[in-house]
Length: 288
Length: 288
Image (tube, rainbow over all chains, first blue to last red; front, side):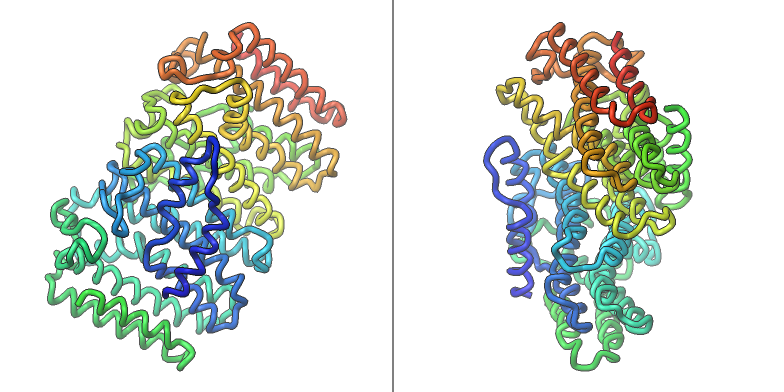
């Protein structure tokens, strides 16, 4: 994962240059929230899935970078006072705390738009047919029936009574859709068979569920300094999570179940999927 | 232009359905700011330029709709309290006044993302090679070195001393880039020659400049009820425009010069460009 993070940082350095002149602050704001932070889980999933199908590294890195740009944009906008109102992200002040709300909105807009430019650059070696297909699927995963939709439900959630199935639906949209696309992108680039793609989708969906529950457990039980963001916010906001809905023990059992389910989906790939298998364990144990 | 507006509304109705359930408010927010308003100048330019090259209507309409979605997103975000803080747009309350700041941010994000999904749908008949090329150019026109960059400069403008050339640069990014792309998209779809594309770029650039000056004159001299948004805002915010920098008479002369220049660029297309010629006149006289 450290290798992936370094490779993604290298790409982002090229895409978002430091600049003097009238665009200096905007560029600094994008760089602040995109470069040098985060687990880079989504790029890791794309690169590892791509390896299963011997996709050229430059192609996998191109779409992995685009996906990470979308993820970074979503964090900047989600942290805004009008949304989750967070002061701390990846262990440092959130974008709007440093650059102001206006520039933070524009930085998010810029990161999102840059994702689509990056994916459609001609020098990645991805065919235009796949560039267009990946663009469509990335936009669907990130858009109103994906991540943006999930965030909209979450924004209104304190005013709603949500049961476990509503919460699962919210999380499938808010975090699941982009994680699923991160995995699927490697399969699309690698011309995976229908069966392989379905197995990887099952893996991604189970992994996404486990990831979200562990995140909610961290929010409930974690240490703010270690996690790098403010905690106990969901409880304070009266937001429903699977942890509040099922209780800590039952939620932890569900996370474990999802982790094992994710691993079962990888069986058809044998030893080649070792790192995809290991990452499920890594995500699960970071809470303990 | 009324025909174009009706066609675009028809496309947007299909893209953003009214919805019950948890996404109801988000969809309502997107529909509020996308459907049934505005001059639809950019789609008009795309459709008319496409006609010069006998581009199939479905192809032109697809990219015209994507461009209008980008324009609508930019208005929703620009109107936010953290940006221009506007209460009135297209003669009705701005999105965040109706749906709240959080949902307005998400509506803008959703409209922008939907633009890229729309452009890459398989049923427009546009080849994947052109879909990918148009996606890249749209993202560049809308992004940090285009519209988002211009808005960032504008946001910080009250604190800067800007001369006419700085202001022109700002406006080329903020409004010029997307207008130029709206015209260029028709030329790209129509496999225009280098000379034809250059002539149309000259037209679009001159038209964009004239359009911006007329907008600034309207801001200075117009009637808020007729224009449909709050006026005298630039003056109140201490923002530099070409009107404040050159004075009203000189600015009006420059707008007229740009209008005539735009028309000259169309000469090589003869009578086929009649509506593109007329629209320059329409934009210029709406101030008088």
